[in-house]
Image (cartoon, rainbow, N blue to C red; front, side, top):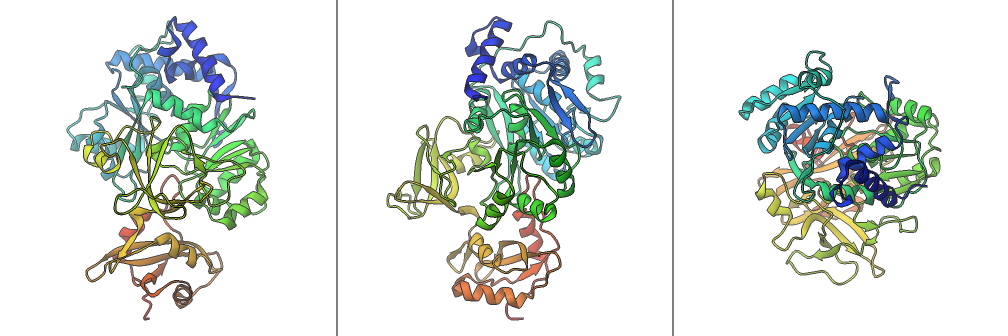
Length: 538
């Protein structure tokens, strides 16, 4: 049994004794290193693609060498570091070096476009970048556009890789000690979040907030774990949590050094039988359609499902195949932690009940507080566990954190008489048509009732006469046929006139998705403006 709070307290005590400091001065870098040293021969990470693996002590020593080399190069506490790559065995070395040295880690998915890198570097101004050879040119261009002369360490280039950097700057594991700094004022993570705009914003997570936040994710899970699966790259919260928790929860991290596919995932799950992982509903639906009866899911004990709401048929389908505790978590990057008490008795469709440690408000359009049950309002939250604003972006920060410290989530909720909260809609996704607000999720739920529809996304595009007009983008199930007229008829039967598909629809073989497994609404909206659409009058 692993009680996360107890284990972290033990690791802090051991680290304090090892480094001759008080437990209050121990930050997450101390705790992670102590976790590696506690079980030195335990396998820390496995690349399921190459079958290569590495022990805790090897990861600890390689990280120490890189951390001292980075200090010798001249990096200082609170410097910003970009780490970009797929989940190969070298990725965690600069990742943990940032935690050891008090650097602000900004983890980036390698599929980030050159334009987004340029925007990101404008805000972050990195002091060092770690990436693979195929991202060097984009990285150099982004740095040049921002007049930055930043060194690039290249994972897969022998002349410029981790070992070359360590050798050049005299990295060593001998007599290693971690720097002392103010945990509340030193940034641990710079987390990318784009919302629906597609433009990167960077959420600030300090060191003290991070360690307490990591513990929150594992409170409900106390079973011993041998393997946990990191599916996404470390830009995304699920893998950030699994990477940082490897030594806090004493598991071996299974990861993939190439982009994930359902077929590869089937192989990995059958081979390693992990006990924990995280899914988005979209990725889960894709996986179940591909897996059929080819994958044994019985090993899973704890699965977090987030990123968007899961539909009851998909939930039931997965539950029938997997006996794990399905933790349906409401969250957003800026919150870092789960904010509702959710357990096995929570009614389906509810995000859970409020926690005592946070403050909650539901706010109506006129700014008043919603007090009656079953009335919609925007969820506002206040607490010390959340992000501290967007890095170097006060304008965007003011849009989400008001003068009284409330985080305005932009998400519409209602609560029942017994205080269960229910997510309704993301406020910023609503489509304004002729003065009326149309919920894309509501339209999507109707369209998914058609037996030939696998996935659907409804977006609003600009219209001179109506402000915006809703358009549906539909992915058919394999081997199925559906006519546009059938979809229009279905929506007419279920929805009022104002909430029809006034902008039409079109079909795609597959819907684009973000690296975290969500439908890429921003990209679909951009595509839809120039797409050939089938209109309801045709």
